[in-house]
Amino acid sequence: MKCIINGTLLLKDGQLTGKALLFDDKIRALTDDAPPDAEVIDAAGGCVSPGLIDVHCHGFMGWDASHGSLDELRRMSRRAAQTGVTAWLPTTMTLDWPVLERCFAAIRRAQADSLSPDWRGAQVLGAHAEGPFISPKRKGAQAESAIHRPDATLLRPWADVIRLLTLAPELDGAIECIRAARAMGIAVSMGHTDATWDEAMAGIEAGVTHATHTFNAMSPLNHREPGAVGAALDDDRVYCELICDTFHVHPALFNLMARQKPGRLVLITDSIASAGLPDGPHDQMGATVIVDGIRCRFPDGTIAGSALTLDRAVRNFRKYTHLPLWQVVHMASLAPAESIGVDACKGSLDPGKDADILITDPDFNIRTTFVRGVRAYFALP
Image (cartoon, rainbow, N blue to C red):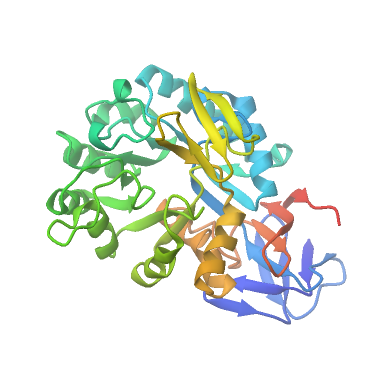
């Protein structure tokens, strides 16, 4: 048994001082004092936070979920723990279906392997399939040649792997696919979509509960045609992803999003294989991506994804909104857990949940990461 003392606990509805957190592989209790037989861990006046959950991450450091490599998924999981991520969805691009199946097979293996203490990194919860059922009009960095008509029969063999599916609800066959995916237990997100308000709302009525990187690669909010953005912001059934790198979405919108989607705003990275690499050109799945600070673009200027980490997303959102830290952490922990249906065991410091725990300094720089009670990262002083 371990016990963290001398920290500010970031709970799902506020923060608490003067209590200790007792855990093994599960969070056991909030107590007044450490039991005499517990391993005591001193938070030294920092914060004790639930682990972060990234439901939209393609890769970083040259590794990519779309490579279909178990070894790369392991490396990414270990690296993710250094940024406070304790669980994640490796996110695939729009690729030819046989290629995607190889990726899903690797993610299935990683799902099982990440339950072992030897994994020593963020737990793999399944896959986020960003496509291939998307709109060519809003494909962004996705490959148009691999776009496929929505077809739920393709999903069925991978229903145990695909936790989240991004599609365009206006496509022929999309409504039927949404209903079938939901029946399989797959959460459905609208993204890379040119949907009108009516088409987006039809998708929500069919079972869409998530919006992929809100504002980016979707029909915009207009006073005569609210589009997919308007539907996502207005409907309380929808969790809205947000890339908080201050480039994909202007930080002036952060407060608006916090007010409009209380409890249903999900911070993501959408980081790509080039994230974490030096500025300059890099090869990514046969294409050239140019990294320039927080920007990742193709040579024609198209945004290729982000170089963001989730701990930095939390710091960015807090900086531009001045919201309390516990509330921003909620957007990167419990809200994403709820959005993909794993909140019974993930996303907060409630007793009985997995011991996915962070110790940070007051500015949310990561000091220690525990995944299911196992120390996965420790920052040397």
